[in-house]
Image (tube, rainbow, N blue to C red; front, side, top):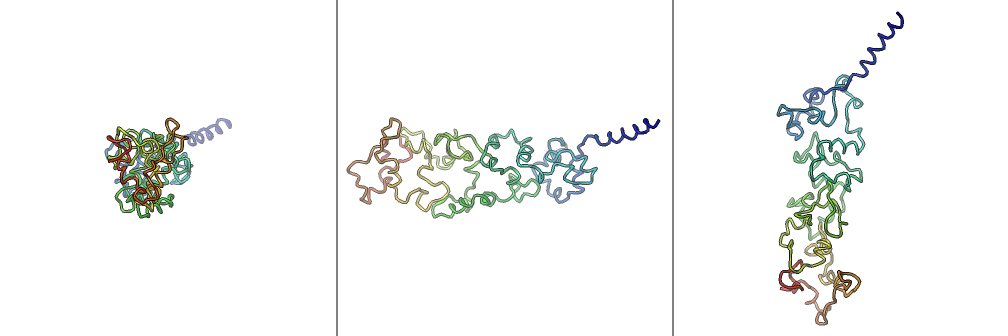
Length: 303
């Protein structure tokens, strides 16, 4: 009899302890989290709730935080719910990719420079209280990127620059912060955060379409090495975003007569004797070689 009585006490205890955690629905959460729920109707994660087709395991509050049954029973506490403030970077990434892994522009996120530096989704996105509802960014995009990329911010203050600070373009027009496949220029060694354009081409060509080609006579440095060989993409103290103040000094980086590179190991031929580079009229090569990005009529890119 004593054994039976003891058994009756033990069995209910374990039955209670092993009760499975259950989904309670997002409307239950607003009882304790009214500040989050107040504007949640504007959130992209809310859309399935409004349609009346909520699947708690995939959408709404419990889609990210897990079932809330134990959390409600315990009257709160981070230990009974999936609290992102307690997650490691990899756990945060896994939670977001449980839904967003099928998005093509996020296909390379696990190997991106941001992820490798432990910069994950919640460092740039604010799911509950984003001031910019589009993409749920934690701050306006330019402020968000400048938080880490201070040197780039300085480059956008240069005399010659892309007008990011003025709002004409933004960082994501050229970059994919979630990572991308290896580009097809510069033997694939350029940053994988570049948002490639068209057929895996440089993002510059989205705006500078006249430079795209294909051309009958290609300029090898443009086609193989890319725009950054001659131009500083963020900003430069030189005209046209050039990396050097005088045009001919930039051209001489390749056109120097060296015979140790090139398709046939012949290098780039030196200028003829008629080009006296001490004469100012020869120091601006593009005065004559106007089709420097590629030409359909002249192999020397002349008019």
